[in-house]
Length: 394
Image (cartoon, rainbow, N blue to C red; front, side, top):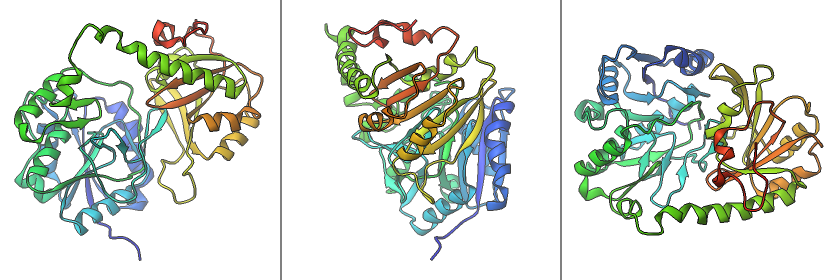
């Protein structure tokens, strides 16, 4: 029997109309036939609203459907029907106060499968799964709850942590905070951390009895304060990570039969990597062992990032091997979400063309099959990015 579907109102506060048109607007228009959604873009290009909560509460007051979806302007929705099904989950289970596309547990596990820039992130969650907090990129709330408990408009929160604060408030009312797969791509160009510490301090001050709480950018209160402490070893802590990741890089290089290596999070460097490459689009293959017809990973999509085209897809290991075997060596190909076993299985399919293997603990291995003409991103030229005993990337 098909799961319940409820109508939703999609609310987005935007400051960049072009980003909104190319991501959120486009996705809604391309999937309009799936669902009859209400779309309420809230214009803040002139700075009318001083906080996200103020702008989103304004949108909520205009909404006519019973379930509200608060979403960033740089999100591509692969399915409007999934939003309606998620709203049906809220209707069927009134114990859930807030439901989002991606959350984090107290143990640090990301819940909810999303595409975050160049990688797949999070463990799949076909049903609502409780989390410590939710990312603001997309979260849903019953309109009745928002009417009684609006989002915080406190200036200290500004444009950060409003979903975290709201989740703690919902939990204080006896409601659950959950994440579920909603099939989205977050096409974010930057990670805005301005005044994040102020927002986290404001959340801690409002909910001292709920601390510590895990957020995607660290701890709020409790253990977080301890971990941010100094000590004489504090300036050298990066070296422990560097040594561990260097060992992983050696293992990966051996698995693929050699090549250059770098320690880095490709999400942070992919745009600089492509900044002087106006020709070919970058094809990004996210390896997904769960990929299958009907699975919940985001679909293939072509998006623009800072004026350049990126083609994203999720593939199984066997599909990725076929892609690599047939690939034009003149075109850039980035394969992400790789494990050591995946590198071994791909090795026999790799062309003799230049390759660059990357590793970061949070995202695993990634492999670039291409030799960019432009200089390497700045992060790759740092000491921390060069695996122990390996040549630097120039």
